[in-house]
Length: 259
Image (tube, rainbow, N blue to C red; front, side):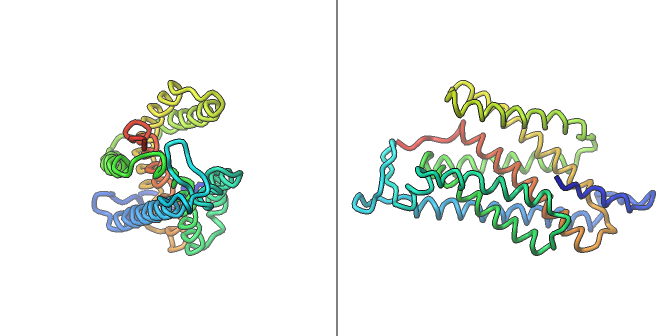
């Protein structure tokens, strides 16, 4: 995956600036957070819009019905029940790998557009949460996630402790979550799913602080607009993924299923 930190090697010895007074760093981090927030907004709107198009309260317009009584339109049946659902699930993964490997060859506008498209595809794949969980529990979990994310990211930004040692441990935890989730597709164990959710919350809580510090350290005041723009977009992508995953794992605990 692309590692934009190698651009820092151009810094002359002693060129580091105190982060507490560096206006350039503040502007860079604000840009990262703004991009992340806009990505989350696109995801939320896409998810809600798709869920609205996929469901209906009119039995005559329904093409199928789920076990919880939700009526699906023909569009909903296609994206949730047909083989097309695999495309919906895997398309965001393919695009995020594309961004990670090609970021150093993309212009800032192309990278930003790719990020917006990715955020919309994630919204499409996550739209089913509006069918599985109540709207009230989704909103409650979102605000709890936002508060937790904000506190963890602020700590990662301000702490003097070097969090780089957490990286390998968190990465191993992430790999474990992925493998366990794949296994549980076939097992369908509620106990294993609970364990995955607990570990997932801990891992992405740690990654939020770790990634924030890493993004902060990637900043170099001598970067041109192209390099700075790429760094900001990739930083936004990392924090966006932390937020989405933290939200989804918390939703497993806090979400109320629709009856």
